[in-house]
Image (tube, rainbow, N blue to C red):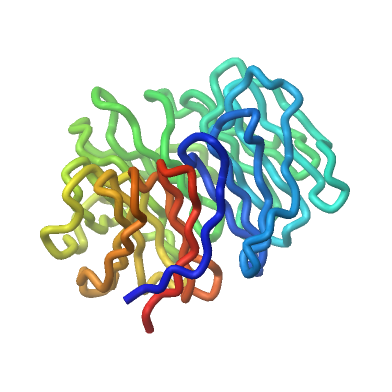
Length: 298
């Protein structure tokens, strides 16, 4: 069974977003509350290294991302995309949006930042120069996931819109639009661009073909007892981690769909999950205002 290694107090509200550096040594977390800011941690020791505080304390933080080499920290707020130089501890860039920022992610090679706001993806370089904007012409984007190569992004959309959209950023077109059922609640791109991992409102997980939407594998039942809030692949794609409103995270074998372990986060929903780069450690963020570090069973 997984072993709880460390706890981090993210602030005074539920954890909304977490991000890990490429070497796995640093982690950023936010609750969304501006007074909590974005907290920057030493993963191994659990020590708080710095708190990055946006200037506008009336805004709300919706997502955070660390650049792969750990030089930059980005945050999506309702009104802005923000960028900090971590070593200098200062904000170095701001982009305003009228559409409501929802999330931010760095490409795996660190060459661009993908910012989601409203039903748009915007790609920026690390100087926050706009490189491309993509209008999905759909409902607001939530739970976006960027493929390893940076070409595709998958996202969840509200009922009445295609539930999952896989978007080809290179060719500026939708590669996949699923039905308008509204059953899916979380999605993650697989390491090879051909697979997406989904979680749904009934607590079930399934992998789909990222181009056709056909089912590849349904994961073992019963799964979670409540809505799946977040899903992620391990770096090598062999494992998956899911977080749920049932106060737990679950570890899965992707090839067989077999449940390997349950991580009992404790009090409150699990709102976000992440693997560390070695695939042997994982993080869960929850409505108890804590991020928890787990050593996964071999």
